[in-house]
Image (cartoon, rainbow, N blue to C red; front, side, top):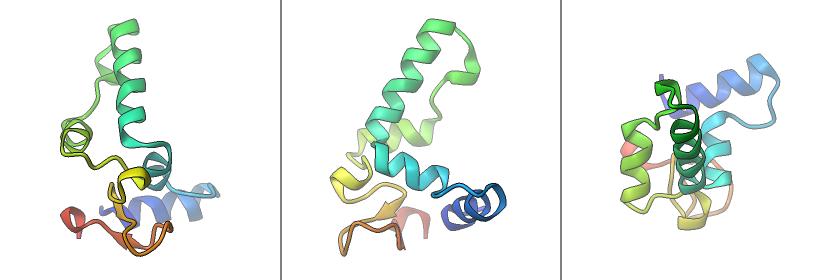
Length: 88
């Protein structure tokens, strides 16, 4: 499943106002990574380990809205309308 499909399923199927990937872009991927690191370090549970994709995106400077690219491309506007190139 792609970015659009994941977010659409959560919006339509679960009645969430935005999908999880759009929400992660809104919060900031660096913030999401930091939260996961704290949970993983605190609980020592591998289910909280951040996925390599998130780590690589943060290392590449793709932080979501604040860097104009994350899972979506925000160069034209601040709405999650255009999927980032690496996912399209």
